[in-house]
Amino acid sequence: LDAFKATLDRLTGAYALAVLIEGESELILGARRGSPLVVGWGEGEMYLGSDALAVGPFTQHISYLEEGDYVAMTRTDARIFNAAGVPAERAIVKVAASSALVEKGEYRHFMEKEIHEQPDSVQHTLSEYLDLVSAKAKPAVVDFAAIDRIQIIACGTAFYAGQIGRYAFEKYADLPCDVEIASEFRYRDPALSKGTLAVAVSQSGETADTLAGLSWCKAQGLKTAAVVNVHTSSMAREAEILWPTHAGPEIGVASTKAFTAQVAALLSLAIAAGVARGKIDAAKEAELVKALFEAPRLISEALRMDAPIRNLVQDLAKARDVLFLGRGPMYPLAMEGALKLKEISYIHAEGYAAGELKHGPIALIDEYTPTIALAPMDDLFEKTSSNLQEVAARGGPVIMIAPENAPDPHGAGIRRVHAPDAHPIATPLVYAVPMQLVSYYTAVQKGTDVDQPRNLAKSVTVE
Ligand code: M6R
Image 1: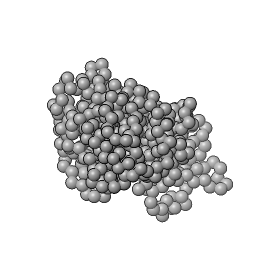
Image 2 (image 1 turned 180 degrees about the vertical axis):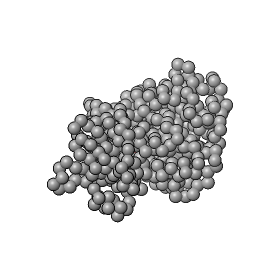
Image 3 (image 1 turned 45 degrees about the horizontal axis):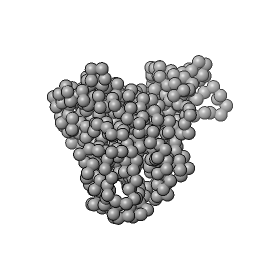
Image 4 (image 1 turned 90 degrees about the horizontal axis):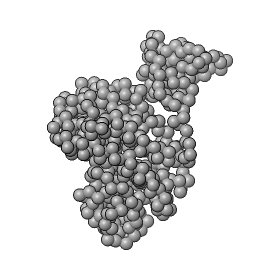
């Protein structure tokens, strides 16, 4: 143990270690710095794992090691020490992680299963924040009227969820909201007023950059909140306010149901903020709450589009580059679509605000570069539609995701995927589904490793 501690003192960087020693069959040593590590307490057996989910099939009794902790484990016991080498008490908590939840069941991939779980995961998440019976937002722990700005910090998919949230906070609550990639935020000395609420958004709650951004805000004396899916994670424990999402365990590396759960939480919180700040009256609140609770049904409807999408991707799978376009909240969703496609199919894709097309990306358009447009029937439809005509006029193949009753843009080569018509507040939740299915079936068509794409990890606990 002394040698282990002496070794740890000489290590730099982030790690979570499990050490076996030849000839010592009754001992496992573990240590963490920068990466999470948990001790699982079984009956006559002990476990070390990266998180509660990893040891979930064996035990639900977990001790979370804190930063710099190390542990000496036998078959029946664990002695935990802090970074200074002093014995430390770490509570044994019972977590709700059922191994049944992490089976693929009838599905070919976890990602496919998780896409299909979204009616439930969105419903559960909405119910955390909204009450359908009274058609009201539940009180949101924080006094939104006393806040003058929201700063969302996140990475990857969670960043795009945050951007969708921003549209809602500004539109429905008149609350200024900035969203920044955590790896930039944490190193740029941002100027934040004391009235800023810092909100970390994360599925895992362990992403190193997001956690560092959150801790930085806390150290500045700002109020902090975390929208997280793993409710026992480092961010959940670090933030003053925990705003949970209820997506359940997400196994596929490419985030799907955790994303829509984050969006559902942020949209709901925006309604609560609107009410608290006197920006929406009871009638508007009821309209928005009911509209969000329609989303699970509309998502189920969107899931039924998988057959036409499977046909469409035959061509898409041959593309080298794909452009995703959207306006308003469909713009971050377009970026999320591009991320999803590149993650699992390895096709290069970019998400753009449709209005930016003429400012550069249109130069990419040719007959080999498909454009996928997210075009709900809102007040921006006509503008997106005319962007698609421009693409079609240059010979670019177009896939337009829009309601069935949306008028056809004039132009050859425009193919359609029908998405259910939804209230504007619910549109990002509904349109996420066809976009995810496009990526999923393209990857299946290409035969890539959908659940564990090359070079990617589910939880990025190092910089
Ligand atoms: O666990 P987090 O939500 O903090 O993870 C953030 C990103 O690493 C994550 O969303 C990543 O972009 C996914 N692979 C997206 O599918």
